[in-house]
Length: 336
Image (cartoon, rainbow, N blue to C red; front, side):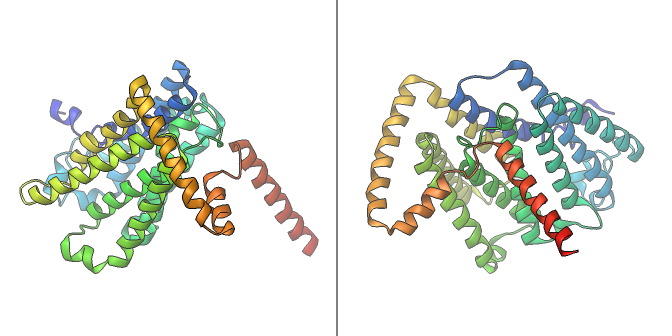
């Protein structure tokens, strides 16, 4: 195996992205609670990266026949590029999976459950008998869910609290990521995008709603506005330089857009920036209250319900699920 293969392969090419996705939830947790445990951080991040890396080994096994026909993929795909054998990939995949799950179990049970859910959804995405990744709508829903949980890992490693959980922020980033993935995976360009207007309109509306709701609900207005301005600038740059520079590729996503997310939120850890953010938040709250006064009570109540979680912790969710399950079992038994 060449040194180049050690630095550039299926695992390492996605490592920065996965680290940043974990870090988003962690940074949001830290900005709200201003505390964390170093051991929990080390175990949770390592567990997530190891367990999720197993996905790439198994994907390379499943996609081998398709990947070996693609010259670009042969440069970095583990099996198609002849970097390792299928047998070695299976062995390494199992080692990464088991070690990742073991480390995750040392964090807390909820964190382990999230890792298992993410792995299961990836199996639905790639399994040859299911292959959700070949179906547009199914891929969109599944990929958005996967990315939402991945962005949540850094939060649930430290707390099961849902009262402060930045749900709409993570929804925004998850759907944006899924959209970029869809454009890349299904090779949507120009006319193809225009021919699928209803689909992309729905995605745009979901992103717009979740983004606006994030700005008016959470105390992160300034970072969110910075990211909007940066995204608009990058899109404008991509349009003007698109013929010479492939804007929507994974290098831009991993090394420009995603790191900018973390930097934008960390800026408010500085006192001066925090003051600007607080002042901006107060202005937005004033405008929101003014608008709410003009809306019907039912609409205001609905919006308030969307901004306030129904459950205060993951334990509450688990208890609610247990009650529903017990009621369902009782109904089945009574019917018999």
